[in-house]
Length: 86
Image (cartoon, rainbow, N blue to C red; front, side, top):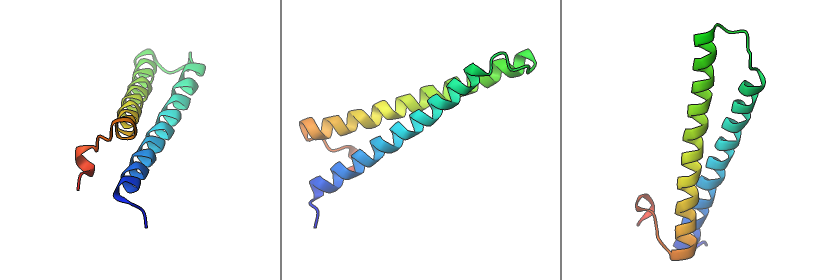
């Protein structure tokens, strides 16, 4: 039977792994869009496409940093995120 500490650590590691995977997916999509320039799409559509993928990558990166910070704070300082407290 796992302890509460082990359970929280597993949840935080799983969250970090999922956020890292999502960032990698967003990064691959960004690289694909960049490789496709010029795409042949009309100018406003091409710009919007690049903006959308850039925004998605930034959001995925922010989520990964947040998950990494929660995991680090838990492992190094014993801080339990509010959503995982008892």
